[in-house]
Image (spheres, rainbow, N blue to C red):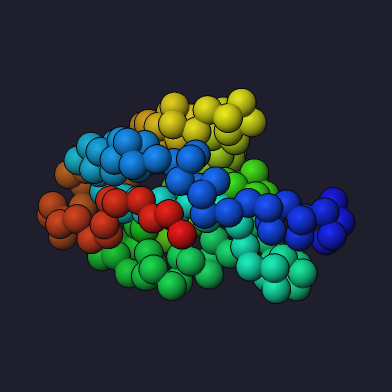
Length: 170
């Protein structure tokens, strides 16, 4: 895909598209499933939806992965006791879902498992089914994290909620 068509897609994807795809009921359901999952595993999940990138970012060639890494740092997702922060980044204009995991959890979960969660979401998004797709992906992620990073095995004991469970719609 060339820069021009990508720039047009980003210019045409507005915040209202984000609110339509992720209305308040969906954001509330996301927050609930993240909170419920975090009672079963020790990871900390943060979900950010961004309808589109700024045109300067698009024209400079910024990828969704690069943007996710930038947001991972900006929102201090790396700043958890066990280095177990996870960012799920959804870029609507690029039709991309990226998962960035801190080193404490990234070394435990195989890349194919992260990819499967992203695919669950993007397959549903292709059908314009954002609500169910994101919830199914989060449930799939919670199951993985329960397997690889279960609650109750921390050497420091139970951890408080270190990252907000509330999703962010930029």
